[in-house]
Image (cartoon, rainbow, N blue to C red):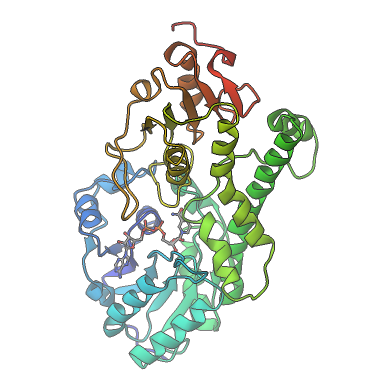
Length: 428
Ligand SMILES: NC(=O)c1ccc[n+]([C@@H]2O[C@H](COP(=O)([O-])OP(=O)(O)OC[C@H]3O[C@@H](n4cnc5c(N)ncnc54)[C@H](O)[C@@H]3O)[C@@H](O)[C@H]2O)c1
């Protein structure tokens, strides 16, 4: 039996980003003592000053209380009963998950681990990654996994923007390959969730991937339907409305720009281990083609060379300040290949200049009115909840514009239409 040493903290979260920070705060809310570790000085500064470094509603009071202090190195993990790893796991440029952040955590953490502690991997990973982590930790620490060091995979399944509610309502999947690890991880997550569902590590890894991939494919089908409807000169929004109306099975999702840091990469984590082309690769191609479809099909109506183009929205999803893996920068690049006179991007949820992907120039963030005034074309790239109201001002602000609105925020039930087709607000 491992010796159990008293610890100062119940949980140490390594990686206090969009997943780790809400989790840490919700665990504090559930009555646990939590400490954080993050290598990013800006995150540490902001959190330790009692502020959220990104938008995630519902955490203001908890962060203001400054009960979660974030350290720069993993030594503090020695003082914690459980360690939860929530660092990033992007795809490399190849079909290969990038484990560099996890490897760096394991190397830094190993000298501070001892028998009796629980390590939970919560980053989204390819199947069998937890078994790789088990071997690495055993090699680095000399501890036996299960008997001495407990190890589990407990996936995060929240949607950004809904963490506060979903962390307390979603069932928690707990994957472990030995009884001691299972017992320790189930006890930890029972503090948070109404229900804890135990399984083995590979099944838990697949649950997370399948949850995300199912959504990604669901949206790819919606986008494929939008293209098919367009081929036949039919209206996808009207078809979808008719198809879903009081029909009890499998609602058709709305078409749109589908990507984001979670959805886009997870198909790659499954494909990494398979030689065959599959449905998931086809879904990837479908979703990635949508920006090109929008630009090509607008150009059949209005060649963009020398025109002024506005793009509304830049984040990867509605009402978010997260631009990671957003398809809008790709849409903007395709618009620029048409050599317009000017492209003005506007997103009221983001700072000015807009956050730039590595190696890309920073773009100014125009206010809505400045972006669309007298534009020849307006792309509604994200379905932010304010946009139905904003878009109704287009007949006054950009009376001659073509609108590209795959999300149908204008309510015209058309993807390509003229500003004059919108019902204007009365005060314009
Ligand atoms: N964002 C989501 O909605 C979401 C939902 C479910 C699952 N996930 C998964 O959760 C994981 C984390 O995603 P995220 O969106 O929170 O990423 P993030 O980039 O917002 O957060 C990761 C944090 O880890 C820190 N970090 C990286 N390496 C470190 C190290 N060696 N030591 C200390 N800190 C380190 C980074 O500075 C960053 O603050 C990913 O695997 C992601 O796929 C994300």
